[in-house]
Length: 239
Ligand code: ADP
Image (tube, rainbow, N blue to C red; front, side, top):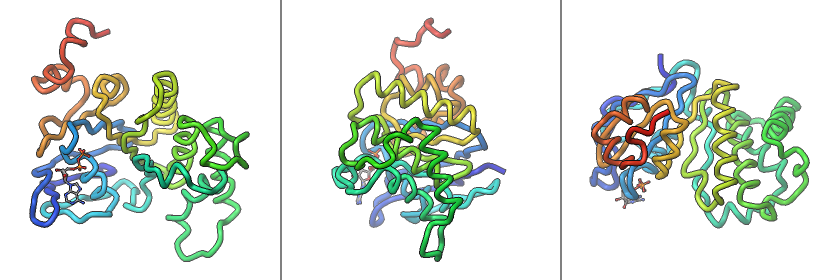
């Protein structure tokens, strides 16, 4: 049983279909990159995976112990988030909100979880700092720790390296890689950086109104779609 299975899914706005006939699944430990040009429906699909937008057709099934509200989500950056007036610890801890249910307070285990994730991402020393004073890379680490607090099996990241410089971007990809490999947490990442996506992802979903491609990264590199979008950069250059 996959963590998430999309069966014949179409999604749109007011009768205008944006993506259609999506059939794919995400298994435990997978690293799926969703790629495609601006407007191809990546964010729309993300909203539906999170249950924030209903599908027009088909169904999204959650399994293997994953519930829809147990997806760790790192949203696209917005100015409002950048200026969030809370401490690093508070932002990380808020990842526990989904599982808190009707309890009006955080438990000791919620707090331990927040400290463990800050430790894992090397931000424990930033604990008391104000989120809005951090650098772009530090903010993304905090939001990643927050996402990890919300899940045991799957994180969903929407364009997480936008605005980060190349070195910080490389470091961030490295963190994701380690989390995926060491903690066996499945990763779903929306990205328009196809070149980097194929370096780390196990699977690629390439959207353009429908799925131009879904399958393993290895097959994507060999496919017509993959060859077209990866250009010459990878021809005869595969390690
Ligand atoms: P991507 O994330 O790949 O850039 P989006 O999912 O944001 O693509 O957008 C896909 C299409 O849906 C675009 O044509 C966009 O204009 C349209 N769209 C996105 N959000 C809305 C909305 N809230 N209402 C109506 N149309 C929308």
